[in-house]
Length: 326
Image (cartoon, rainbow, N blue to C red; front, side, top):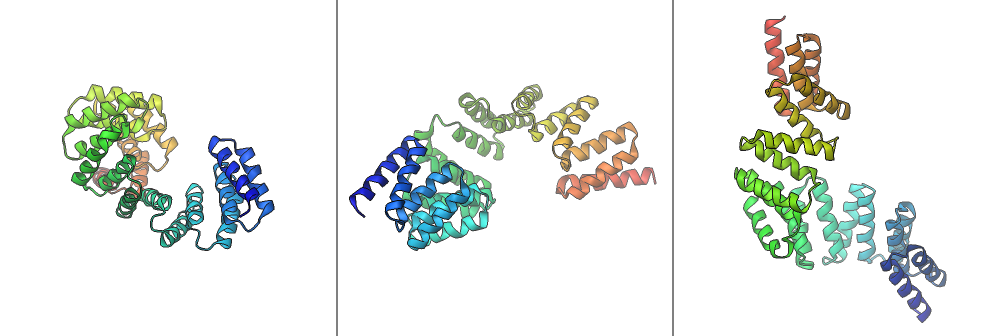
């Protein structure tokens, strides 16, 4: 590589890191004008194009880098990250696995595979790659992701150990307290769960999922009014949060506020027409109103949704309706 090529790549990288993408792209392309056979230049340009969301151009540049250097693990790793952004899961897994086969210490490939398996719900495989990532680059943030994978597998003691390891560096990270709250909730220590969720929200007040977990913990301890307050706050933050809307509706229904409950279930079904909880309770409300035909239709749709709990409830309720009203 001649001195001019080195200069252009160095300037391109510096401009890239500083956020001056147009100038960085110009330097990379100037480098390629000097030498079209530079796999590094193609890879660097591809990474820049990926950040600019010019995914098709980025993919072509990664292909060129790999064609020029079939052992270029970094290019395979970056191409895998591109496929993750494009939600092309199978191709992402293939090229990231290839990157690791070329270099087991390719950190970004290990990290990206861990994220991919987390997205796919394959928690055991995600756990493996988070552990590999941590061995290569022992950052405390990785421990939070590892703990999440362990929680998904109900390995709660191991998850707690990882969170305690992360605590000294992550004590101001709301996610740490959220994960601790989930562990306490799963082990029926609802008081500690409430404390952790509140600590998380103190650091990140607009996290609707943590607020929903707090509301559920309040319900478990009989603090219904506190739960209602949190659920209503969630709907102000995130009106499309159907779990919060459904849970608020169920509370209202149990309190005799049928009209308000029905309004919430109706909104849920506008957002998610096959939501089993909203379908089932709308069926219940229609039955209470004496609209048996609509109640049956809602219950049949609940059964078609194939949600185990609500499917069984709908089957039993339909059976009882048929016995009373043939």
